[in-house]
Image 1: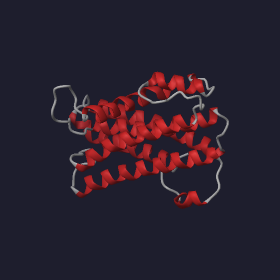
Image 2 (image 1 turned 45 degrees about the horizontal axis):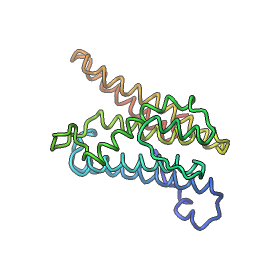
Image 3 (image 1 turned 30 degrees about the vertical axis):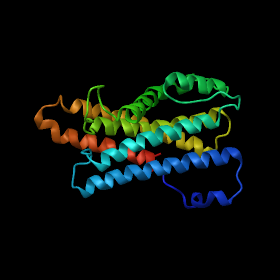
Image 4 (image 1 turned 90 degrees about the vertical axis):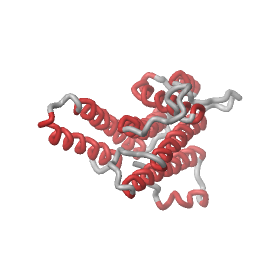
Length: 232
């Protein structure tokens, strides 16, 4: 997960190129997103709830995270668009094709990231325009579930993965950017494994549940370690 380096707290006092400033702003916003996620986790723990049992403030905080994460991604893409008077908003995967094409980049290497990013855009739209209600006639939001948690984690991986991949395609990436992309792509694979174990859990006989729960926990910890750079 993103953490805010001490030097970024006062980056406005230093001279930066435009590209460096854009990157610092992206990473600053991702650090803020990570802080909000940690806040939701802390509030859940204080209430002595299971890790994925979010309700009240923790659930609403994570909905706000989705909106902020989408905005961070949208602004990052818009920042690299040519100044030709055309506006850019990210509401679906077709917008990604247009954005990448406009900056002279082949969209093909990015396609594996389209599904989670498209899902994020849809969820943000549902939150902002429909109060995150599941149907047009619903008056109550569905409870935040382990599926919501898994999807949010995937979006938290996919957004920076796309960003660093874009920087590489544009020829402005540092060696550190490349290392970060490798870490996020590895974390994405581990997170898919984590999701598959959750899906398969309900199909197992009761006597295998304890073993399966340990494997699920191990997969989750492995994803977290990849994101923190503790596993190369």
